[in-house]
Image (cartoon, rainbow over all chains, first blue to last red; front, side):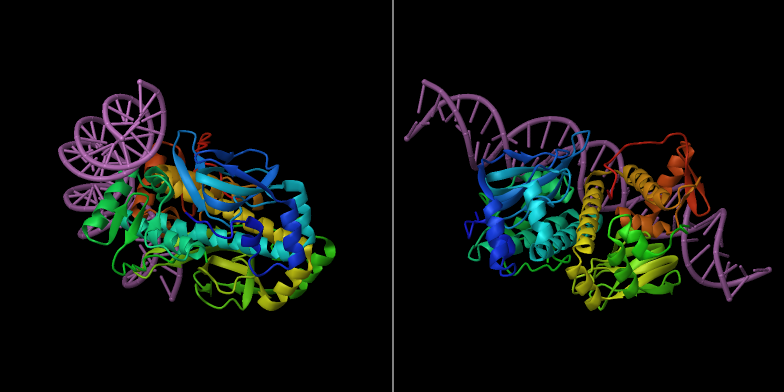
Length: 227
Length: 227
DNA sequence: CGAAACTTTGATCTCTGTCAAGATTAGTGG
DNA sequence: CCACTAATCTTGACAGAGATCAAAGTTTCG
């Protein structure tokens, strides 16, 4: 699993944000660790803190009254787990395997953002990227067959993971089949069957905690999500 | 159809943004009209201009290589048609019936935004609202039956329209069945059948360019989108 | 008035969901 | 370290919601 720079402020600012702004952000950040399965925050809760991911994978999801679940996104290091500035969380977040996050006191972060155009800028860009990624997902759920959804998911996931840990033969899939299913609007049996079918066709190989994409399975199916 | 304040800058700023910022925004705005069916901009195009909607309805959509279409959102007065600051449009936009927009030269708008924290703030909030609305839609497409999708669409649409034109017995539906279908990830026959089924059950009445919701059909199905 | 566009309705098929049983993996305690 | 249990994943059989194909009805507009 991604073990890289491993500090949210650095990852979030990238090369942009000037040194002073980065320093300010670091000053507010409180590092915290969570075990797999633990909940960082829940839908509807007052957003006293903001969270940025340093290490690991987080699933962001909504629960419907009748128990159905929609995984809205999987967060990776460098992502805010929710838009800061929002009054309340509009989804829940929990750790997929062990993670580390940076916690920011909401009020102070707000002040920091509103007085630093550079950070504000990064935030708008982050929001725009998230929005586009959500629209990609929308397009996928609105039009794609089970196979298209799974393949597109794998390709997008690989791209995102590769950015963090360039080397890597197999694509790590730390989340459960159920998580993937809830992300793709399918049932877990369908996800499982689709994996099997792709494997029989030698398009992928299913390994313990991931998959290996075989021969240039570059099915450019749907526009790739997030940037 | 919505005939209200009818000027984008005013609608966008609401009560927030101070007078000077609003004046600046007005100064950059060039009003333009389009007929129904005309395209304002297309996916992939360089974003030389930004557009804000003053009057009418705009469908924002993506086309897949094989001709399938996903309507990503319907814009109403007060909405930006796309995030300013983006280099290129990530979807196409065309008029549903007659509309008026404000066109802004991208570069100057960018400068205005980056020097006015108030406007920047409004923009972040707009982005956050759009993101949440996209996630609501995701949840709907990932979990909802045809009927849930249609009912949720009607309720959300009514809420948004009501904000602009408070009085209104029937909910206006200026878009085509095909547009609704492509928004909800269904086929137009399914949308049509679902309308018929709801009508037989006396939940709605289908009228020439809209529907009337009958007796408290307050099916609080999914979290209501956008804000 | 008449043609084109749009909508509704019908008949059938298919993909995915549902229900159920096995197989595999992970985790625990002896 | 192994046996045993619980959790997760895979596979099978069947059913159903929505897609597809086709035709009739309605509205729009020149």
